[in-house]
Length: 78
Image (cartoon, rainbow, N blue to C red; front, top):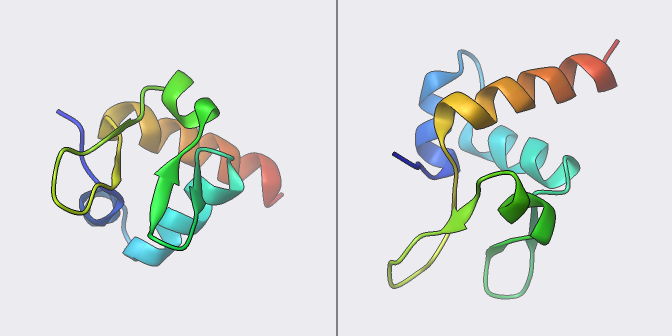
């Protein structure tokens, strides 16, 4: 089941939704445009999709993306 960054943040202790968006942006998985957040090709290649709502948002499999976020964070914040 894929979830938006707001739900993924609930799985992570001491992280906000904005933190998750910023990490995903730094990873190159999403970009922000005038309308909102959009998935990049890299994000799509790593299992991301856009939700099918009135205001689509990038969604990811929490188990997969959290591991990648932690690895990215550990590699960039040594």
